[in-house]
Amino acid sequence: MSHTEVKLKIPFGNKSLDAVCFVPNKSLPYGIILTHGASGDMNLPHLMSLAFHLASHGYFCLRFTCKGLNIVHRIKAYKSVLSFLKTSEEYRLAGVFLGGRSMGSRAAASVMCHGEREDAGDFVRGLICISYPLHRPKQQQKLRDEDLLHLKGPVLFVSGSADEMCEKNLLEKVAQKMQAPNEICWIEKANHSMTVKGRSTNDVFREINTQILFWIQKITEMNKQE
Image (cartoon, rainbow, N blue to C red; front, side, top):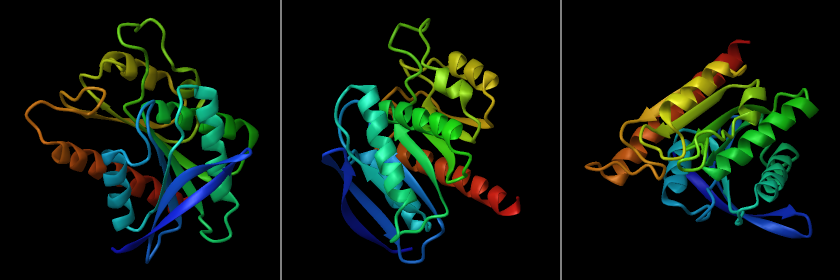
């Protein structure tokens, strides 16, 4: 399915955030927001690959850049992007999935968590965490799980089984404690950057993109039946 690329400046305080939308020509009523980790920007190859894959299947996809290591700043930026889409007269989405890679997924989780507490609406339909940084390397005793444990909406984790910032058994234990319905897609032998020795980058991307699309389709189909 073909789509149009639209470059945006999203208001953020007295500044703006750079963003790019892929708008399918025959669009479904749902969108996905994506952002990068502590380094890089919205043009990270995997984010671009994922956005293209989702848009080719009819999903509006917005990715944005917010640089910096301050998680509070990243959360505020994510909220601004969500607010922009929620009030957009141009795109008129029925709902969105919040997504991000590494630090970007932490920001997305916090926005979804606090949004559920403040707003009983159903605009946010789910959360996609790619390489969620559950802990710092070699600091497994300090888990970043507080927002995850308070979530209520559906969550998909896509993590490498060799991720040095998300030990497999620890994420599985957190997932069991979560109130929210959740799934974990393990990418075998992938590290935090989703690199797998002996596999091409594009091959790993294809596996991840396929799993994410399948999960989104499943959740949106469930929403139709409610």
